[in-house]
Length: 136
View 1: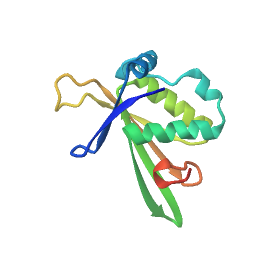
View 2: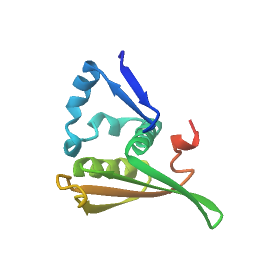
View 3: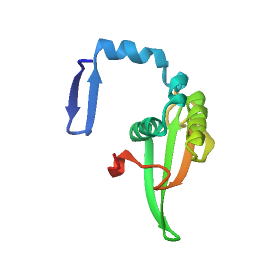
View 4: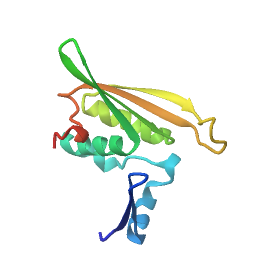
């Protein structure tokens, strides 16, 4: 897929655009309608892991701490799609990773904001290898 893009030094963000990309992502719905395609649940663990890592890189935060001789990674992701949060929690369970779902409600700073769901994920480095830490 041939995509056009631009980069902003001031905001440190890429903007990727193209009609083919827009047409492709329409199938996944608007922000509060997003979902994980069923075929992803049937993939090997490393494919699921790549999906989770990419999702966290785009919409999540990853923190690492050392406790009791182990390195623990705490990740959190906030989304407006309860379906996507529920499916992500189920996908993580198939990988042997537990998580906790929280309802945060709409962001009161913005009058038109949608309700937010947060998923907290705490794992050891052996359970989840983050792309951010260069495991792949």
